[in-house]
Image 1 (spheres, rainbow, N blue to C red):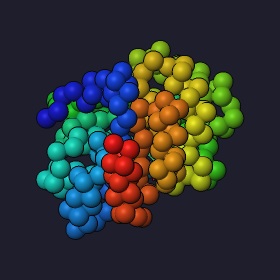
Image 2 (image 1 turned 90 degrees about the vertical axis):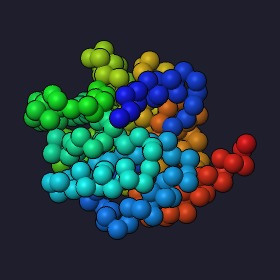
Image 3 (image 1 turned 180 degrees about the vertical axis):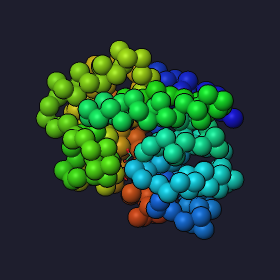
Image 4 (image 1 turned 60 degrees about the vertical axis):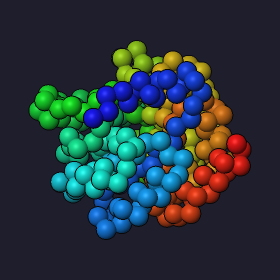
Length: 248
Ligand code: 1GP
C-alpha cells in the first residue's frame, strides 16, 4: 500500500518534476491485452496509472486493477466515473467534484454513496476539483454527467472555479477537455490557473503529441494524463521515452 501519493505529487510541484499518468478505461481494454500494455507503460516515462471511465460495467474496474497490479509497481489511482468503480485493489482515489457543472449527483450524491466503501478502506483519498472545459467535441463525461463544460474563453469563471475548489480544501485541480477532445486545454489557460492556485494542477483530454505535453508542462501543469493516444498508438510510449533520453 502506497500512502504518500499526494505527497509525491505535491513535492513534484515544489521540485519542478513533471508527472505523466496513463489512463486506462476498463471498458476499452480486454484482460488479455493488459500484460503487454503494462509492459509498454513500465518501459515508458509514465509515473502513474489512472483507471476509470464514464461508464464501466460493474466489477470490471476491480478485475482490471488487479491485473494491472500484477505487472507494475507504478501507483494505480482510481479516476472513477461513479462510485461503483471504487475498488480497494487500487492505491488511491481521486475523489472528484465536478465543479464546472451544477449537477448535485456529481457534487455530493456520488460522494455520500461512496462512503460505505471508503469508511474501512485503505485507499488514499485525494479530494479533487474536476473542471470540464469545452474541447470542441461533446464528450462522454458531458453526456453522463448531464452538465455543460465551461467555455475555454471564460477565463474568469474557470480561474474562480479552480480557486473555489482550493478554498473548499481540495488538494488537486484537474482541468479536463474530455477524452478524445478535439482541442486540449489551451496552454495559456493552464498558465492562468496555475498562477492563481497553490495546489497541483492535472491536465488531460485530447493530448496526442509530445509538443502538447511539453506546452502543458511549460505552462505550469504538474501532471498530464493521456488515454486515447496510448490506446491507439503503442509507439507513442517509445516516442516519448526516446525524446526524454535525447534531452538528457
Ligand atoms: C484524461 O480524459 C482524459 O483527463 C483522457 O483523454 O483519452 O483524450 O487522452 P484522452
